Length: 352
Image (cartoon, rainbow, N blue to C red):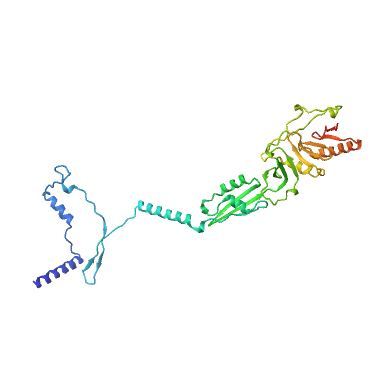
């Protein structure tokens, strides 16, 4: 029996050597199955539950997973070791999409909660009459993620809230910087409306006084019962026929033409310039006033009112007023009203 085992093993090794030398191998199982089917014999019918009568089990589809085969040759000629087959793993688009979703969610969570991307305060430059602390208090960006900031929205909010800003530039920089560069309008006069001081810029923009330490006495001061946004109805071009006694002069609605029109920035630049010009000629203890009917005027403490009307030809009106005042003074007359609303037709009314 021991001899038979040795004989069998030697026969197996001899067979493998013969195959390596080029001898043809046995026909494959598929060929034998094909020859078997050609011989005329057929498989016996097999009944399967759920199938129609007469169906053959051999017609059922089979699915085989492809497996990778690995054979490792040994040092002995003709001997090899076959390792267990490893299935080929393919990553489909669904698995890739799922991994991408998890990665995106993780990155969003890190950006949202990372202190590196949290805003502290905005860096504001160009301020003169407003403090950076006040602007940051309005923006309230501290503690917000930097990628949640919208530069266009921030710029529009600043322009809407602070009319003293003529231009605003907003820039967001990573990881957590917000830079704001503003151009601030400088006030040139103070408009007192019902006891509330409003600063007026050179272009006519009106805005409230925010800096309590600002000395408003350095600017020309004008008092009015009219809101700057409602400036209209200034008397102009009043024609007085020659020979009319000024003491009997009466105003009629038909003699008052339309006055200054509203501008997009509340006051016209001409009106602002006229107020600045008149402020140099206002007498001591007198107050410059804007009247809804007579326009620019002042109340002289010596007992008369002077009406200048609209800001048109304000330099000429001052010259006419000086000449008329000197004439009255030389005649020893005490006026009650002096109107230069129409510089070509000035008039005065004496005290009764």
